[in-house]
Image (cartoon, rainbow, N blue to C red; front, side):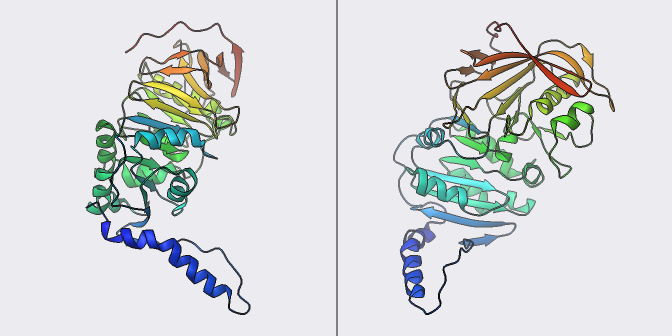
Length: 359
């Protein structure tokens, strides 16, 4: 029996029961239909729980490894179907720290092809040690981390049994995905937004040591992302400058092989078990942006604008392939060189890069 199996029948019956209640209510004089927040099926110590589908159903297919990196905004369904297939069309668990059942309902009702989805909405760090939560993660065929505020994920999950469970899930050959804030924490380093704000490129370029540049490490430890810091909503929110700063900060701290990976809003990069990444632009002109320093010269000083040249920026489009961990991009959509100085970032065309050696 799967976790929460005793709730399965109620979950399956819930839509029909709800429809009957609404129909009866509509017959009352003066009734007006109003949107209501979904009611949790259960509440634990520091979390709310939702579920949909048949939690007892057998998983139809085998699971395969995969990482789904989503830039935020509207979901590119083709990429999500890729993850669902790798989860064996089985049982998904959604993790978040705001909202309710929106993501699980979109998985189950709009995309389809899964047996069930469960959601845990966190409000306290102690939930990351809750046996019920950890058992659900252990049994999950796929796990998806929703958007929101990544500082909550850092505060609630870092150095807890939950973060260790996410690492184990991926090592077991099961798919893991994240969008927006959920993408931000998937790399070996993360922009934690720990000051309660959202760092802009303008501020970061003006002072790479601004207190808002909060970089977090040793959170998750995922294969193929060991040298990567991720970023989301990339072109729409003009985040290339801040990712260049993040990479420069880490490079200045002695992380010689660090790379930045930004994903445009509405796009997703799917990385298979062999480390091959394919971009799904989601019907938009979206890219993934690979940011790598190619020389160490420049100025990185507290209170001073970043001065650096030779930062290679490679666009990954629908026809490109990213091969990890060597960071080789086949058929890049574009190649640029970034120069930071005086608080500004300037791009120029670059000659195509030679294939990188695998690490």
